[in-house]
Image 1 (cartoon, one colour):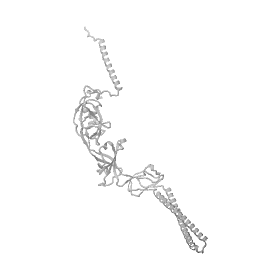
Image 2 (tube, one colour):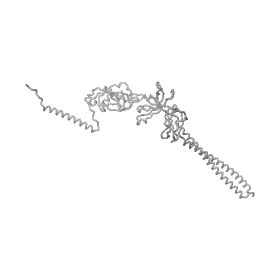
Image 3 (tube, one colour):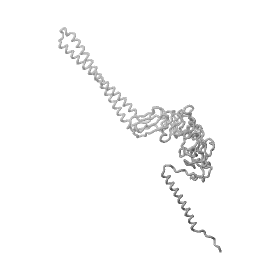
Image 4 (cartoon, helix red, strand yellow):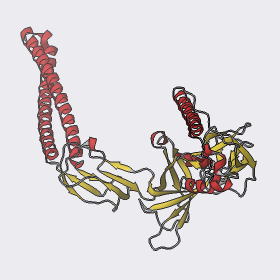
Length: 445
């Protein structure tokens, strides 16, 4: 009986030892490369498979984008009238109107506790009476002084006419002249007292008018006809200028459209652009259409919040009724055309800002931020016509990765994109890859 030949144990162990050594060496080499890459500023080279991934690309084509889009907003007063209390520290006794109520010019709005003002008015009246009495006394004194002055003047003239004939003595003539001088001094003093009394009476009358006006300010009235758009006062409130206006009043017929929008949607929008405002109706009928024009564009809000403000002046021609304050409305804006390039929706990615992969002459891809038109159909910034862009595989690529471009047409005209479309773009990207994932292990990760 012949037994089968046994494989020597030592050669098998030697073979396994060599394989284990090669594996350990390879692992150490990879660990050393990873350590060196982590200690340097440059990113590790993108691992490449046996062949570059085949990806569909396209040439960016110049296009125009119409800036027709819709803005959601509300109806506001163009120039609201702020109603403040003239005097601070007064308590509110009565409030006659409420928000949303129509008022006429001069209609009472608020009655303040004006007891202190009424006391000031009473004191001013008493001061005026006293000044008037003093003026009457001064006028009587002036009349008496004038009478005495005329009498003294007559006697002095008579004595002076006969003083040379010896009929009267020189001493008597001198006494009459002295009496005349005294009467003149008394008349002058009385005239000065009358002027002072008249000045005091004028001041008292001015104080009385001021006190009367102040007492009248205790009752706040509507300066113009309109609708109370805001009420910020209640019975018992102590009025304070720092607290702001007590009421906001919208003039009759003074309405405009107001909307806060993302700053990117303001691209191409200009003051004076025609706007059609759609006013919602409570009956569920078709919205009322009102023509208007962009009156103001405030982009200062976009510095921090990335939001701007658009105000549209409304035309009253053909309007059935004045739009209600605070009611919802939609503005359809038709602005000037924008120049740019158009791309299919699958080429755009969002994080949340839009970006694309641009392919250079060596087949490497680079991530680039772009700006879209208001409707999202045209790239207005960040991309020039003729550049090569990855069409649909951006979700499976990495910046700096080398690909094998496969030219394709631009396809149909792009639809408006939104950040929500990024997920569907990534799902569609897998269909644009010609090679299998195994052909590029680095990209598959």
